[in-house]
Image (cartoon, rainbow, N blue to C red; front, side, top):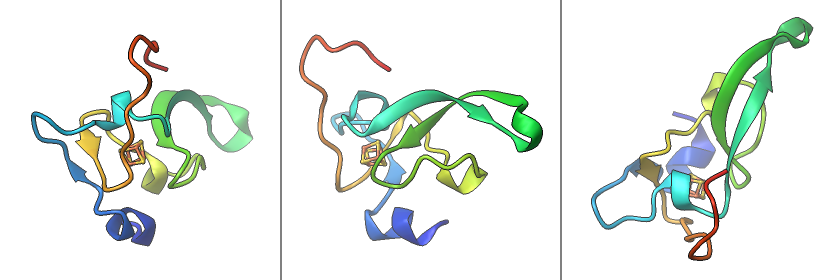
Length: 77
Ligand code: SF4
């Protein structure tokens, strides 16, 4: 696991955790591969980095010590 993920205690989310999908830092974005072909939409985190590399991929059901909930009523991104 990448050092940044370890530093923020990135982990599987439990029932009452603010999960990545509901965190203000998460983005569901299109990832461009080598040659700018699309690798489809994946989750990334502004805290951990938005690079295309698989190390930067986050899972919507995971969480970490930096998790902060989006305002109520905000749509998932
Ligand atoms: S800050 Fe933590 S909980 Fe929020 S999106 Fe990033 S890894 Fe997930």
